[in-house]
Length: 248
Ligand SMILES: [Zn+2]
Ligand SMILES: [Zn+2]
Image 1 (tube, rainbow, N blue to C red):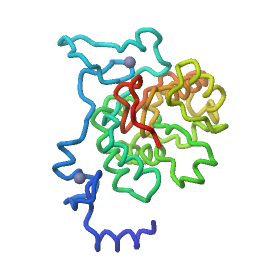
Image 2 (image 1 turned 180 degrees about the vertical axis):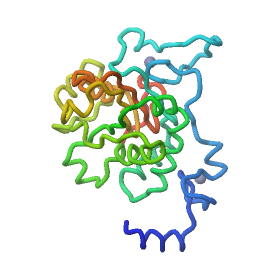
Image 3 (image 1 turned 180 degrees about the horizontal axis):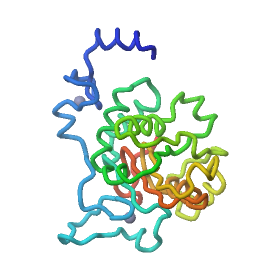
Image 4 (image 1 turned 90 degrees about the horizontal axis):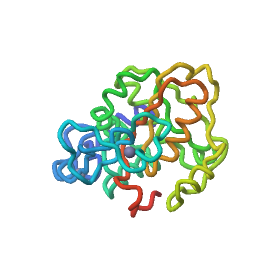
């Protein structure tokens, strides 16, 4: 949107809550009821993939979820701000299909707290890529919007086009682990190895479901010589085995 038009709209319309139409004081905030209803990811989480664990952690113990214990993902750590629920879904849909910069800014702000150590240590922020055809249809790569805003907020370098998607992949929901990695095989590539070589990469995405896409991105980044790959998302499905919410 043109700055002038944006300014005019902002002047006429007060900023609204990240998740509903209630007017709020500042752009990128929740209204009070939505803040109370927001499902923030809280401890205990898997120290590797960041999935909220259903049982209370013994104090001081670092826990790993069952899938990470059985086979560690290619990324080192993944963290998220919110559990993926109906509210998170509404916010993320707003990112995908409309010009809602306040949602981008609000979500990026929410991602800073769980992502702080990963953001601090990252040499480059890289969004999970969208296939060009899908990008045209949607107009935005929501992962890129979040990465741009996080780079602005933290001053970390941005690698917007470090990864590219060669082909579209079918929805991964409902597929088992082997079928997911077969579907992703060859779909994602590193544009130039030099951009990521010896770097600590922080992958940015809107939602993490099974982690299969993030895992494939991490795998190709490490193959290209990245030193370490972590993942930061706005939301994550709390238990991918019980993924009842369709990802639109
Ligand atoms: Zn609200
Ligand atoms: Zn895990």
